[in-house]
Image (cartoon, rainbow, N blue to C red; front, side, top):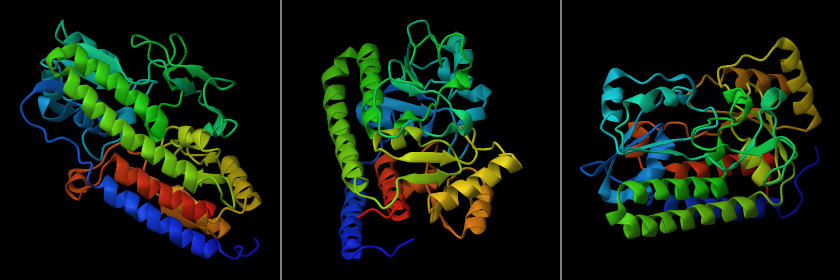
Length: 336
């Protein structure tokens, strides 16, 4: 691999300063404090944060999947089912991410509203090894389809895991998830409709700024392929013209076969991979093993499936973590 071109180091320094500013600004965007208000239940942490940003102090948000737990295979507790029986709005991701959500419907009040935030979005189909399809495309095409309505998680009769659920890692699609949450809140609390609309517009503007920062940072990189332990970043890869190779696929605990590991070593060497991305919530063992084999180092890409109370207390939010993810990607891809 050739040495970085003159000016690349200075360019990276400027980019690092800009990313640092983004982290500082994002730290100001804290989730709403949870107190009295319209009872709202979100399936996992990121959607609870989105709801809090839109609902502000008019709502009381509870999260079903506890901090630090893995949402893919979580089972709600009896105490949480009791909370669901009093909720006015149930918010979940869909696309097969929470297969247990359908069992909650019988516990909801008759007038409760259910929002599936991926309904109508252009979903990626799960591919062999869950690699991102044709990087850079947006909208529907081969390997994609619009998400079904709220009553059909993951595509009617198709297996739920036929689709990649991690749409919130694309800041543009995250804006559409926020819009779905806004509609749900306005339906259950019409008196707060204008306040919700203002809050949603403010948050969506921050998400749009995040998107523009990603687009600018990832536009000019030495390489465009990255390897991650968890196939959660296909939507992000599609949005910004990258190619993700997943070690473990959509299930973060899946174990690749020996043949797949040999293939990953070949791919890493072919693409000159210098960084292997591990993640939170699951063991970094596979990523560290591959990194040792190919002489790479590891960095964390956080799929934002559950920040802990300590992380929230320290000021970490969707925006700050996405900024950290961008910095890690820019380093591994050697972006100017």
